[in-house]
Length: 249
Length: 307
Figure 1 (cartoon, rainbow over the protein chains, first blue to last red):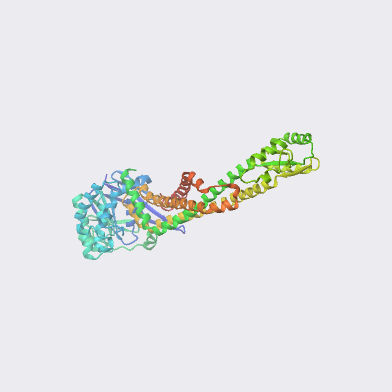
Figure 2 (figure 1 turned 45 degrees about the vertical axis):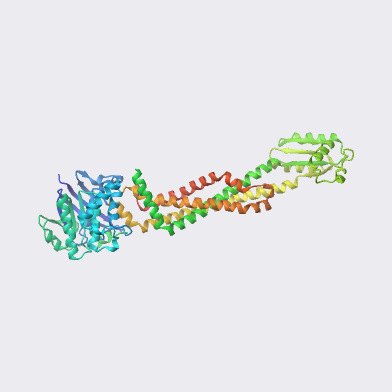
């Protein structure tokens, strides 16, 4: 059995007018432990929906998702926080707390997990060294560049030593140089800690640079799964509708 | 919940409370007014009701007779009244006893010898009378009517009832009014407080939805997300409770002269009452405040945070 397994996963959304939108259709995907997988597709292809299902933000309409031999569609509501502690998530918009400095932002992830203060101090300084932000520890998010902010977000995602790191368009707001740095950091994490990395992107340069497994999605389906992938340009029929659904309320 | 998460949650709650101080201030003010209004009516009703009761108990009716009426007839009337079921006791005071009472009442410093000597056992103009006590003061009215119907027959000089009657009616009117009015106003203010607290929480959650999202992402338990909000409301109602109690103390202090002026019958010391019931006032307000704040917070979070 693979580390992460999706079998016949379908996710449907109902629009307020009663119309049904199929965001994911019969997805079958196996991801091994320590793998670095890129999820590719234009907006609305279903990448973000897939990540939402994997972090148990949502449940599939049909099908089964197992992570480390556990069916996560059957996790009870009060168990979700404990499941999330095993997963690091990074987003395009960083999601840092503006009123907390770098150190505090990272420590926050451990504070909620009831780590001791000593533990927090140790782990935070280790992770700061890893992402190369030791001298920025006391700075606030608004004092950082985009690349630095994303490194803080990665540090926060990784400080709890999760087995999986999911990055949803982490370089979407960054210039090529910073993007490169972030991708290098993800590779480093994958190599050093054997963390399974799932990277959703539509940046062709990154895919080519990575030269790792690429799963391409379009219209909620997997259209190709290559060991060393290239970006395939496929247009979606319902990309606009899906974007509407995924917008925050 | 461990001590560690408790201290972290308290810190978060307090930081949030301070960061939202203007919003918190609005919540505190509304809660203060609500607690104050409710407590005011409760205290007011308590004071008026208890004093009315004590005055009611002391209420009686005295019938004075002309001197020429034979004693037999007075005793006959006494018997007639005594057999009525609502009557507790009827006491006959004859000439001697009236004189003794008068002697006991008059104080030598106040009354000059001239006046003192106006009344002697031999020449005593004070009327013999019947003192009637009843079980329920409401029945005094019936006895009063009965006596007025028989004024001629028993040569009744006067009936001492009207004076106490006015006091009682005044008090009963105040009690009835304050009970109804107090209840309506209290409910209204409690509702307003609920609404304001709901909106305070809504605004807080709205301004902090990013933080909540991040908390969820990093795996904060529902309690960890919920408690800082609850604590914030609890802080607000705690402050409100203290301020309202101070206001009540001040209010009673300033109300004292008016109470003595307009309802001297009460002979009330409001401040003594305040100190005596301080614990109860504080506890009552705390319970009401916590109920409003915690209930509105939980109701809102259940709906919007799906916690």
